[in-house]
Image (cartoon, rainbow, N blue to C red; front, side, top):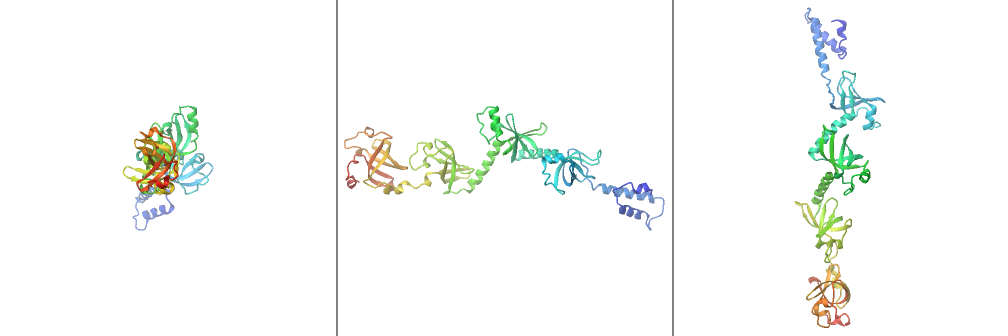
Length: 407
């Protein structure tokens, strides 16, 4: 074999060459003119085996590599090719904490230029993030996953956010973090949205168009999803009889909705107070914190019924002590009926003045003596807590011995 052949492949070790030569020219090999050809074939075979250990990379491919060395110009990364790839250090600084980066760290890179034209492959962290970002965006879109994204800037009509290295857009109509309902597009809207710059918000991918470089997200849908998940968990852990603190979120004609920390429960009009309530606004207001009792749970429909009045003592239990027979009490006329007038004494406590107890003279109808809303002083004639009844008298107010003849 010629000297030039022995140095033709620097990837083959001297031991491998020696072994190949020993095999070709050993004591048992026939000494003929084919020896040189056999040796060359063996070397070619060894070279092929050596080259199989390296991978071939292509432009645009995203690879997970290992940091080999770091200097002020480049980060050298082992990507499984013959020679390491290079990432410009300036680019790495934009996306990686270089103070914490060390040799042996794993890093994802994209191949900008494979080795061949240059000694080392040229790599990019930026492009790798973008490629992986599009893949993750597509996966998030298909799975309906909720992500945390950082708000980068305000754009006309919405927010620009960072989604795994991509610039995504959240339209103003899909933002929940600030109240913008009714705010027209312009400086006022931009000022409201600017308060979110630098903050992290939850978002859900609603559109992915890689060719047009278009990524649309929604904070509103993400918040709805998260709230739905929290509601499922909360409803599953609630039990009838639980006492909870919550915040009133809305008031309707039929009751008030209270947020228990992820799930809204309804306090029906009849469960707001022991007394009769015409409208929930008489008892609660939006934003007010209240104590409620869980009275029923519909797991299938995810509905929770609550009560405020059941967290308070039943007024009738102490009615006899608070309104002793013969005592004078003050109340307000709640309503008038043909047979008398109902007087509201306290929450949930109403007494009746029978038409015969309105005056010493004959009264055709209670309206001839009282009007709804009038404040009156009356005498207690009898108390029947078990029947939820109190008998009152207006005509006996001025009779000191009325207590002795009551009943």
